Length: 221
Image (cartoon, rainbow, N blue to C red):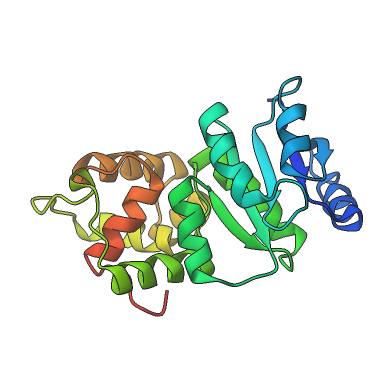
């Protein structure tokens, strides 16, 4: 299989170099280009195509907040991982609503960045304690209504399905979930697909929101 193609968009040269060097050790991920602002990134995407973009929030000329909706409009298939120095719940929910696939602080180590890239590419979203807390707080503070299809009261999940859903909310990989419930990774993937059908969720994000709404995960998540 071809490696996952990544573009790093950040105005700090040393940060770009550090991430690129760390990811160069991974055979299944390849940094194909770098940009120092959103305008530069959009121009790059006219000639090359990425699978995942690491997008800094604060940049000159065109920052990540302005760039994100443009990327989602022009290239909806590209996964976007937002990078920032701030742990800001309101900012996280805003960016997730705009279409971000994950949100990492720039202090995250290289293995976390690698895992986020892989997970976003394979499963669309990468959830961590930051994103989960932000979603929970957003639901509490705004009492945000969810799309009707995400919540189907008639959905009846068995104990195994609930266990797998909870493990997904804890950021466990398919392999880790498989080991925890003593099933094969392929079976876990099949159950995850079945969960989407039963809950009406269209994505992993929908399943997380279902778990939050139905109190399958606690406030400590």
